Length: 105
Image (cartoon, rainbow, N blue to C red; front, side, top):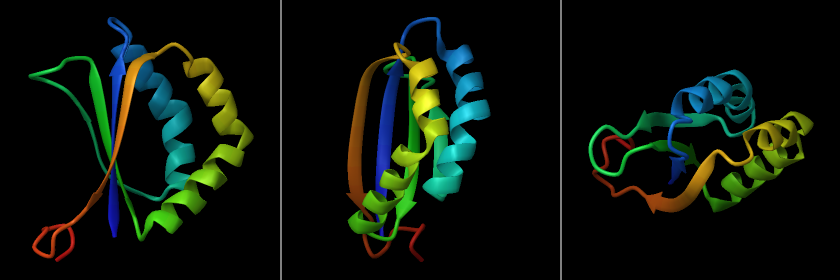
């Protein structure tokens, strides 16, 4: 099992409109294609204007297959177009849980 930790820094003043747009357009598509959303967060203290989401996959191959399916969806292409210019930075990490990780027990 792997975890994909995605951090997006949203342009100043665009957080609320981004979250509304994401919830309406992107979230249903991602849940359909990517499956297991572990959590979706916004920063409160520390670097501000950040959104973090964590997705769970069986393997890197599972992730790749699911992301290819998402990228092939015309509705996802449309979302990316209306979302253009929202982010000033994006960071993606792939994490592997330890044997004592509570999400694996």
